[in-house]
Structures are given as C-alpha cells and as structure tokens.
Length: 467
Image 1: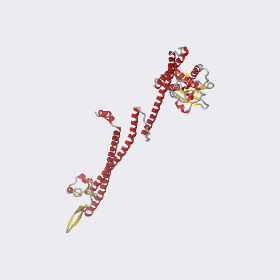
Image 2: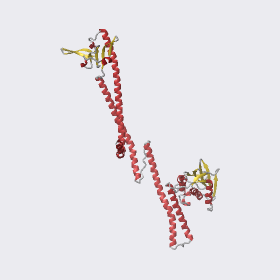
Image 3: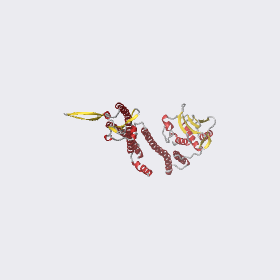
Image 4: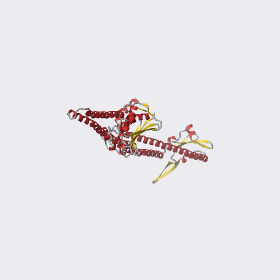
C-alpha cells in the first residue's frame, strides 16, 4: 500500500510542482530538521552535564555532612540537638514585638535518621520526620562512627529552585539559538534559490524561443558554476544554430543556382530548336546532353551526401593494397586528360594495406586529384604520396597551384562553400567534391585536412586505419 502511494505521488503530484516549490520545500525541511537536531542534542547535552554536576555536588555534600555528623556524635555521644546543624534560630523584631523561628542553613533537600532508622530531621519533606527508613535506604547513606553505623543521611535528587531556573534558562537559550539559526538559514536559502532559479528561468525562456523557431540573444551568464557552464553551452548552441541557419540558407541558394544553370541552358537551347532558330543537329544536342550529365551528377552527389550524413551509407570493405590502388586511379584519371600537369606517385617503404571500400576510395582520391589538377598550371606538377604512419595509411595530394587563403582553410569541406576566387567553382565542379571526400573518409573512420605547402601550393591529406 505504501509503495503504491509513493509511486502515485511521484507520478502525479511531483511533476505538477514547480522547481521553486520543490527547492523551497527541500531547503525548509533540511533547515527545520537541522534546527530540531541542534536543539535536541544541545538540550540533551545541557541536561546530561547538569545531572553530572548535581551528582558530583551530592557526593561532595554527603562527604561533608557525613563527616560533620560523625564529629558531632563523637563529641556529644548522642544525636540530641543535631537539628541545629541544619537549622538556625532566627529572630526578627517587628516594632515592639520579636518574632522568632528557624531557617535552613543549607538549601539542600535531605533527611537524617538516627541509628534505629527513625528520621529526626528533614529539609526535603516535613512529613518525613518520624518515618522509619527501610534497610535499603539505611544502606545507601550510612554515618559511620568508629566503624559502627550510628545514623543515616539521605540526599534527594531534587533540583533546587535555583537549579530549575538555571535549567529552564539554558533550554530557552538553546531554543532561541535554534530559532535564530533557522531564520538565518531560511534567508540564505531564499538567496540561493533565487540565484539558482534566475538563470534557469532565462534558460527556459531562451529554450522556448528556440522551440518556436526564433534565435534568442546570448544569455551570457556571469556565474562560474555548473549553471554558468550550462549557459556557455547554450550560447555556443545558439551560435551553432545561427551558423547552421546561415549555412542552410546559403546551401539552398547554391543548390538553386547550381540547378538553375544547366536547366537554363537546356531550356534555352530546346526553345531555340523548337522556334526554328537552330536545327536539331548532333552539335546542338551534345551541349544539352552534357548539361544533363552535369545535372545528374549534381543530384547524385547531393543524394550521397544526404545518405552519409544520415548514417545510411553502406560500405563494402576489402583488404586492399593502397599503393597499387592509388596507381590505378592515377593512371585512369590522367590518361584521359590532355595537357594535364605532371602527376608523380611515391610510396614510402612497403605498400600498406587497409580495409576500404574500393569504389568510395576511388571517389575520394579522384575528387582530390581532380581538384589538384584543376588548380595546377600545365607546367606545374601534382604529387601523390602514400605511407604508413602510426598504424594508419596516409595519402596526400600536393599541387603547385595558387594555394588556399588562411580564412578558407576551415571551410573547404563545406558544401558549396565560396572562398578565394582562385579556388572556387568558376573553374568547374559542382562545389560538392570536397564535402563528399570528407563524408567518405569519415565513413571509413578516418580524417582529412588541408594545408598550404611552404614552397607554394596546397596539400590535401587523409588517413585511414591500417588493416
């Protein structure tokens, strides 16, 4: 039954309670519990110390009175007049009259009995006088004279009025201290809850804006705790969202531009043929056919990029001699080009092997090699190197072209990126080649990067795990 109630409360009650109420309730419960424990242990310590003090005082008083009573008996030989040890005669003059009586000398609750056990003096209870003590009581406080018990002294464990006042005052002080502590802790809890909830509310409002498709301003929280780190992460996320949105808009415009160019050429040529401006000769159909090929390749590239980014790209891996495969790709690529720059291949040491998809590897190297040939003058050269580095296969493609501007290095592998005019789509290509290279390399659990050579030109390098 209790478990069902707990589950019902956790499912239906707690989710409806705001965080501020939960934090306030938690802090309040901790404060009250802490104050109660402090008061309990403080009060208990005071009472224990007070009892120890009274026990010690009773022991001292018994030692003192038993010695006095023993001396009294040795001196007088009886207990006659022993009450004078506990009471003193007091006379007060009121006008012409004198009023007398007896007053306690010691404000200590006790009873004294003679050797027969009969109580003859009691400062604790007047009705106790004349009572005969039990044997147990006589054994608890014997008055010994020359080794013989000649009387009994009983000291009662009853606090005096002064002691009662002291004990009540100590308890009151503990209660006041606990109340002050509770008030101070509550004030601190309010400050802490405010500090916690204020940035969280700002985060909530900003998150709602993001959920509604808006890009809010940065939070710029000043705290250096975990909430501050959360705010920094949120601000970083906002920057990424804005960048992604700009990239999406740019990509959409670039895709439209890339599709519009071949479609416009095809449409214009066909309209000219239909209007009789040109005849439908093979010379007129060839450009249309080439534009359809370009359009088809662009669509295929976009489709493959989408598959790779969705994690749906399937690789058919084989154990391949990378050096031999690189030579095959270079021979097939360069042999079909006229006036191409010199392409040199070097394999460092024994040709390494790797588990790769030969088709995708050909696409990676063909894109990098085509990119290098596109920007290298005919009297320049392109160097393709293969070597093993730390259980990885490294393939590099270096050219003697114009190089890459520093601001473009970090964006080369973005689709449709428009960078330096010396290395943009004006010289051909769909603007997707390097983006595809990056996706295929990462699909092989590798990495790719670009850099400028000290002697001039650019170098593109990728590494794949060695078989």
